[in-house]
Amino acid sequence: MRPVRFVALGDSLTEGVGDPARRGLRGWAALLAGGLAEEPVEFTNLAVRGAQTRDVLERQTPAALALRPDLVSVVVGVNDVLRCTFDIHAVADRLDRVYAACTGQGAVVLTACLPDPGNMLGLPGALAHPLARRQRAVNTVVHELSDRYGAVHLHASEGEWLTDRAMWSADRLHPGERGHRQFALRFHGLLAGAGLASGAAPSPEPEFPAPSRSESLWWLATAGTGWVARRCTDLLPQLLTLAAEEVCHRACGAGSRLDLRASAAVSAALAALPVAQAAEAEVA
Image (cartoon, rainbow, N blue to C red; front, side, top):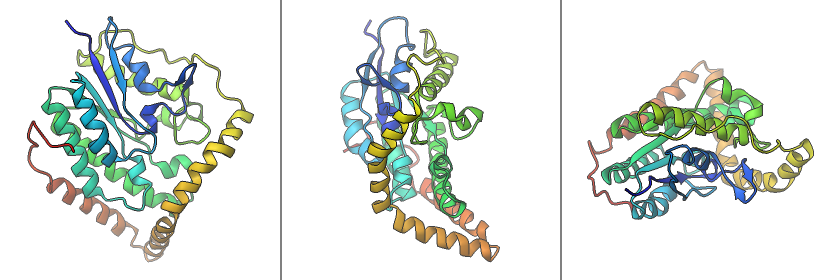
C-alpha cells in the first residue's frame, strides 16, 4: 500500500510565508501533512507567493495531477482580490475547473474562505469596503463550489482566533507560526472528523520564538516595502476610484446598491458555470 499523497496549491499563505523554519519556510500545509497518517506522507508544496487563480489553474494543477494525489489543498484568491484585474466570473470559472480536475482524478479537495485583507491591513473604511466586498465574493464562490465538489472546507474568514494579533506576522496579511498552526490544527480536525486523518494533530504551540519587534520592523522595511510598492502600482489607482464611488454612494444613502451589485455579479458568475465539469477537465 502506497503512502498518502498530499499536494498543496495556492499562494504565499500555503507556501508558508510567516512561518520560517530551520530550512526555509514551512507553513500550515507542511504541519498538516505530518498528521494525516501514522505512516510517512508524500507531501509536495506547489504554492508560490503572488499566485492568483490563473496560476493555480494553468501551472500548479497540471503538476499536481501528475503526482496522482489523494488530497489536494486549494487555498487561493487574495491576490486576485488585490489586483486591478479582479473579475469574479474568471475566478469562479478557474476554481471550478481546478476542483473538477482534482476530484475527477479521485482526490479529496481542501478549501478555505479567508479574512478580508483590507480589514487585516487596518485600511480606512472607504478603502477597506471595496476589498471586503471582493473577498466576500470570492468566499461565496469557494463556499458554493466546495459544496458542489464535496470539498473539506475550513471557514477562516471570521472568528476570535483570526482577530488575535499573536496569530499574525508583521505584515498583518500572513499568519505567524501560531496562525499557521491554527490553520493546520483546524484542517486536521475536519479531516479527522471525516475519517481522512489518522495521525496526531499538530501542536498549537510554536516551536520557534516569535520575531522580535526589531526583526519585524526590519522585515517591513525590506520585503514589506517591496510588497506595498507592487500593490500600489497595480491596485491603488483603481482602489482610489472604488473608494470615491464608495463615499458617493454612502453620502447619498445608497451604499447597499454596491453590495447588491456585487451579489448579483457572484450569482451570475456561478450561474454561468456548467452544471458539472467533466472528469477529464482541461486545466491548461
